[in-house]
Length: 332
Image 1: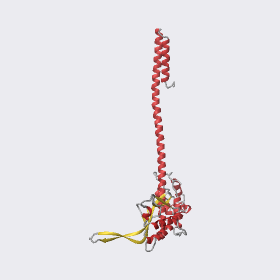
Image 2: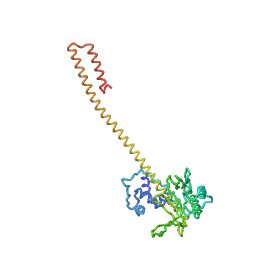
Image 3: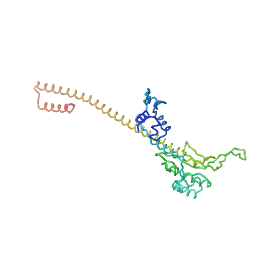
Image 4: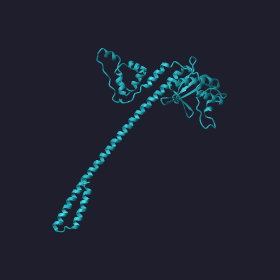
């Protein structure tokens, strides 16, 4: 729907009723309205209206684009997934990607060795599991559960240049599973301070590339139990990216339309300028043609009065008449 339609909807019935009818969360819907500068009815507005008391309706800001497209479907999907997020399905079968990853990790020393090896012409598309042999089995099981629940939500696993991404609405987020390392300070024999990276028995799941989001094993909660939260975060980021792309697409189309309008204005202006120039040129040529006619008539009268009018004169008059007709815009 367009932004103006959403504005009319907001002022036609209470927000909670709208959210119930469209199966979306109240907080998400309110945030959507705020982000798009859609004014909301003040507290007590509908109560006053029910008792026929005077109320005021806030108009849309002037700078708001009333034709902007607003998509409620992503909010519906988020709300639908929220209702099922506590449930984690444990797949009965092992996902083919997990099988492939296990095979590669079995014949190589590490994930890095599996993905990029000397002599390999192409990078391997396997799941990003950075653990030692001790945690490898649990990491593979985690990935199997994660992928199964992700695909149930419509999230796909995608590989680009050896890196693994979660994809939704054509938006991708880098994912990674690793063994957590702790940095411990150590004093060398020479008295210098240095640090050693010590392995732990904890798994850490990461999303993103620059601004990473991490989920780490704790004493009370394992990351397997946090898979719904991880998927919620991925879904939220993808929805935000999708909405940004949608807004950018609308702005791009708007700019393209404005450019077309400007080009049409410039084209019409150019035509008008050419017509104006042609008008003045025609006026000048008409004046020149009239001047030549007067001169031709005077020349003819002069030849007749002198008695020197002959065939040569007639030939000259015919030639001048041709030139006048070529010059006169009223004759062309």
